[in-house]
Length: 593
Image 1 (cartoon, rainbow, N blue to C red):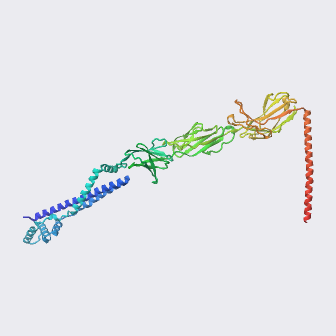
Image 2 (image 1 turned 90 degrees about the vertical axis):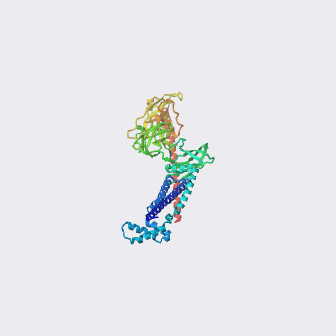
Image 3 (image 1 turned 30 degrees about the horizontal axis):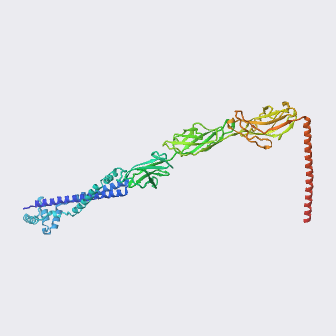
C-alpha cells in the first residue's frame, strides 16, 4: 500500500521530468535559431557578398541571438521555482475528484514532521488513507506540457535535415562562408575564378602605385571556365566612393586586360569575369614631383661693366652671351636627385639645399654660351619623375653686337691737296662700350692698279674717361695728309674701324655702312682667326694741286652764289605775292563795313 512518502517521490519525479522537458524545449528553440540564422547569413552573404565588417556584424548578431534564446528559454525557465504545492495543485486541477485532499494531506504531513499541532491524529490519518486511495491510480506526469517540446523538436529536426542536405550538396560554399569570417578576401566557389589581378604602369611593368595622371593598366588572370565575353573592372574612389566601370577585354587564353585612362586619387579595383569576382585591389596614386617655384640669378661678363639684373623667377633664360645663371628650384615633394639637361645633351646636377629635400640649386652655374633650350628632370624617393615629356625652357644667348661706326663728314668722296688737314667727324656706338678706334687707309699712286697699295692703320686717341663710350657722337680728328707724302694724282681710300671689349666668340656681325646710309651685305667671315672689327663705309680723297683746289673752290663759291641769288629772287617774288594777298584782304574788310 502506498504512503505519503510515495506521493512525495511521485511529485519529485514530476519536477525532474518537467525540468528535462524545459531543457529539451529550450535547446530545440536555441538549435532552431542557430541553424536558421546560419542559413540566413549564408544566403545573404552568397547573394550580396557582404563587406567584411558587415559579415562580422552579422556573426556577432547571430551569436547574440542564439545566446539570448538560450538564456530566455533555458536558463530563466530552469531558474523558476517549482515547489511541491505548485505541482500538487496542478495535479488536483487536472483531477477535480481529489477535492483538495492531496494538497491538504501533503501540507498537514509536512507540518506534523516539523512538530506542529495540526489537529486530531485520527482525522489526519483517515484523510491520508482516503487521499492515498484516490491518488494511487492517477498519472502525475500528465501535468507536464510536452506540446512545445514536440513542436520545436520537430522544427529543429526539419531544419537540421535541411542543413545536412545543404552541407552534403554544397560543402565548398559552406566552407567558403566559414573562411569569409576569418579571411576578408575569401570567396565563394564560381565556375570562373579570378586567380590574379596585377596593376601595371605605362612601361608594362607591375607596380605598387601609379603616378597621378597616368594610365592604370590592369591585367587579370583567370582559371576554370574561361568566358568568351569581356569582363568588367570597377574602380572605386577612396575619397568619395565614385565608381568608374571599365571593359576588361580578353587578350588571349586566360588573360584579360583593361585600362583606366587617368588616375587622380587613391582607389580600389574589382575585376569581374564571367561569374568570378576578385577581391578589391587597392591602388595608391602618388603625385609626381614638379617644380613649384624657383629663382634665376645672372652673372654677366666682367667687360660689360653693368650691374647684373635682380633675380628673376624660374623659367626661360635670357642674358648676354657669355653670362652664367645660378638656378635654384623648389619641388612639390622631397627629391632624391635633380638635374638640368640641355638641348645639346649636356647635364648639370642640382645639389640639395634644405633638410627636407625640397630646395635644390645648381652645383655649377648654367653657362649661357649659345641659344638653345633645357628641361629639368626630377626624381623622388618613390622612383617617380616629373611629367614627361618635360617642359622645355628656352635659352636666349644675346650676342654682343659689334660696334657701329659711321663717318659723318666728309659725307662723300672729296678732293684734297697734298698738305691738307681735313677734319673727319664720325659717330661710334656699341651696346657695352667702344674700346678702340682706328683710321685705316690705302694710298693708290698715280698709274697703279686698283689692288695696289699697302693698307695702313693707326689708332685714334682714346675718348675722354668721362665720356659715354657706348655713344661717341660727333667725335672728330684732324688728319695731316702731308705726313703721307702724297702727290697730285694719288688717291687715298680710307675708313674707320672700331672694336669693343668682347672676345670674338660673342660677336654678332653687323652690316657695313656706306656713305649716304646705304647698307651692304654682311662682310664675309674670314677662315683665319684674325680679329674682326666693325668698319665704316669707304671714302676716297683724290689728291690735286693747290691751283686745282683753288679753282674747285672758286667754282663751288660761284655755284653757291648763283644758288643764293636764285633764292633771293624767289624771296622777292614771295614778298610781292604776300603784299597782294594783304591788299586784297584789306579791300574785302572795307567793303564789308
